[in-house]
Every structure is written in C-alpha cells, then in structure tokens.
Amino acid sequence: MGLSMRVLITGATGLLGYHLLNATERKGFDVFATYHERKIEGFENVRWIRVDFEDTEKIEDTVKSARPDVIIHSAAFTDVDGCEIERAKAYRINYHATRALASISSELKARMIYISTDYVFDGEMGFYREEDIPNPLNFYGLTKLLGEVSVESLLRERGLIVRVSGLYGYSPTGKKNFGLQALEKMMRKEEVKAFVDQHLSPTYVPFLAERLLRALEMDVNGIIHIAGERMSRYEFALALAEELGIEKNLVVPVSMKNLDLPAKRPRDSSLDSSRAREFGLSMPPQREGMRHFIEYYREKAIRGGV
Ligand SMILES: NC(=O)c1ccc[n+]([C@@H]2O[C@H](COP(=O)([O-])OP(=O)(O)OC[C@H]3O[C@@H](n4cnc5c(N)ncnc54)[C@H](OP(=O)(O)O)[C@@H]3O)[C@@H](O)[C@H]2O)c1
Image (cartoon, rainbow, N blue to C red; front, side, top):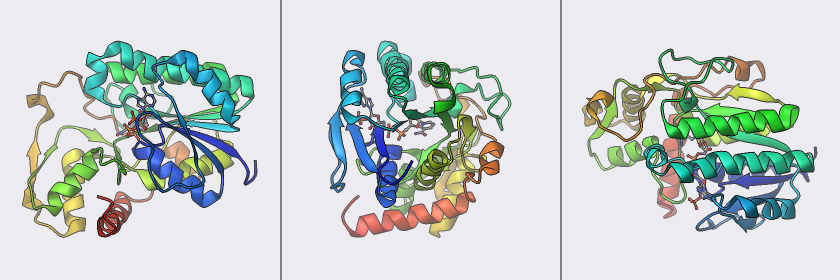
C-alpha cells in the first residue's frame, strides 16, 4: 500500500484519534475521520463523516462511502463506570458497532486495526502476554473483548487487535485523562491523588499513534500489546512531578480499595510488549514520553490550545 492509502479513523476527536490524525497527516495518507458530536479544527485535508455508533444500521452506508483500504477503529464508550451503568449503550457502541465494522471491512477486503484494552484481563497476574486468558472484571472490559472476538473471527489475517493501557497525552477537546489531569494540577501547584495499588502500563499517545501506522505498513496481524513500562499510578505521578521539576510531596498516595466505584478495576493490568519489540514497535522509556508530553502541552498552552 502506498501513499494514497485510504484510511478511515473512527473516534478521531478522541485522545488517540486526534494523535492518529497528526500522524497520518505527516504520512500523507488519504484520511477520512468519524466524529460524533463535534469535529476538531485544523485538519484541512481530512474528510469528516458524522456517525453515531449506537445506530448500527447506518454504519454500513457511512463506511462504504469512504471505501477505505484500512479502518483504524479507535471510537469507543470509554467511560468505565458509565459502561457499568449504561450497559445497553456500552454493548451497542463497543460490541455491535465493532462487529458491524469488522463485517464491512471483510466485505470491502479492507484491513482493520481495532484498539483494545488491558481491561480485558482481571489484573490478578500482571505483565499479560497476548495469549493469556482474558477475564474482564467490568462491563467495559467485556464489551471490548466481544469486539476483539468479532475482529478475530471476521477478519483473520486482515485484522490487528492492539491492546493498550492507561493512555495519556494532550487532548484537543480538553477531555481529561489521568496524565493530563495530573499535569494540569501539578502546573497549578495543586495536590494530585494517585493510586498506589493499581499497576498498569501507561502509554503515551503520540508515540503509540506512530507505532500503529508502522504496524499497518508492516502488515502485522493477530493480537499485539503496545504499551509503556509497568508502574503504579502513584509512581507515574511521581515521575511526572520529577520531570516537571515540582515538589514531589504534591503527589499524595491513596488506595483504590477505599473507593466505591461502580466498576471494578484490575489491580495489575500491565502488559508485556515482547511481541511489539520483535517488530520494532515497542514504546520508548516512559520518561521520554513524559518529557515529550510536557513540551507538547507547554507549546499548546503558548498557542492558546489549552
Ligand atoms: N483511555 C485509555 O486509557 C484507554 C486504555 C485502554 C484502551 N483504550 C481504548 O483506546 C481507544 C481510544 O481511547 P481514547 O481514550 O482515545 O477515547 P476517547 O478520548 O474517550 O474518545 C472516544 C472517541 O469515540 C467517539 N465516540 C464515543 N461514542 C460514540 C458514538 N456513539 N458514536 C460515534 N463516536 C463515538 C468519541 O466521540 P464523541 O466524543 O464526539 O462522543 C471520541 O471520538 C478506545 O477504543 C479505548 O477503548 C483506551
């Protein structure tokens, strides 16, 4: 596939979607992007398509109008507690819509990259490999796993399932992720509470987006984990504070056990990215991501983008 590859990015207004737009723009791909509520400014060459993934019936016409060679399916109902409460909505967006996309993708002979999650695992073990047995603790994880099964069974070698963990980075809509929230609080010299008892593999999104496009060019298929180094949320916040050069005692250790959230969270959902390493697709050291993040954020702040 050459420079004129037609790529459809779903959920392009989300955290990963936005950085995928940046990365595809640099590659000169022919990009179609779905939005749900509002488009984002600044991508002159992108063709925007409005879609509601709750309305599965309309997905086919919408996607077929773009005639993509590749679909990167990043859209999801990502609010983990919201999925626990609004189960029908989570089922439709995360499972039904993914299955519909996989089926259209198969019909068009297009490839599909499906972004999945560390939350398919129960977190009892940590350092999960691709072949470990999923056992989601919450409804979000279950619906994302059903999405995986659809991609695997309908697309086989044309499908790639990429599991990621704890995404962080600048978001154009201001929607908060743990890293962004922590960074903004630290910059205002406010206290940041962080779990000591939840380990994951925080993944810096601009670097992830580049790797996803490389995976596409390399024709990788099956399941792959592309995620950052394992750490607790507390260790993550401490390292970020250090990189920012602020007082580390602004970071306050708290326990996840004491919170009564609607959805259970895995204790250790960290991912082993050995397979990604074999393909040269593993993430750089966490600190490199953090430094890039801080610089990127400061630059956006100067230009009035935050
Ligand atoms: N964030 C994490 O820490 C994390 C961890 C592991 C895996 N993942 C996976 O990574 C992917 C990207 O996550 P993210 O953090 O970038 O997500 P995000 O920022 O929450 O963005 C989600 C995107 O999906 C779109 N969307 C939601 N409901 C929709 C609907 N009914 N119809 C059409 N579009 C809809 C949103 O559009 P609107 O905003 O307009 O609704 C938005 O563009 C997801 O598949 C997620 O499951 C994320």
